[in-house]
Amino acid sequence: MTTAKETLSAALYTALSRLRQYGRVGIGRITGTCPSTNGQAVMSLEEARLFHRVELSAVASLLIQKGVFTSEEFTVQMIEEARHLDAGLAKDWPEITVAEDGRSFSIDTAKMFQRTKHEAWPP
View 1 (cartoon, rainbow, N blue to C red):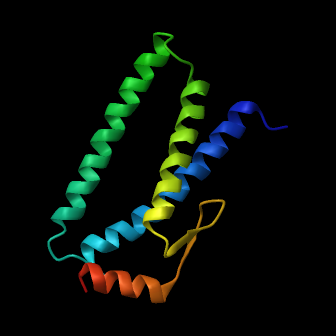
View 2: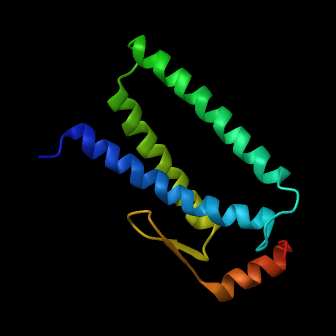
């Protein structure tokens, strides 16, 4: 039998997986279809991501420990925020359709080609 905490955890994983798919395309916007020879832009993004993750984890842990909210309440709010961001990204990226489980996505290649040409993405 699945517990409420496991259900929340699965919902959070799915919500964040959906966001990850947009990130995959966003990185392509920076690096193009070929690996970056410099790599500095991607490295900076990764560093910022790691630092933000550490900061968020520290703040959330402190707030949970101090009883401001529970870990379950935090997870529920993260799901809500991820779903809200997902809806916004879906509007920003109409060329992309993310699978409901967040594990894959499909691209309307004709529309994406027009977008990359219009926005002058790297080759």
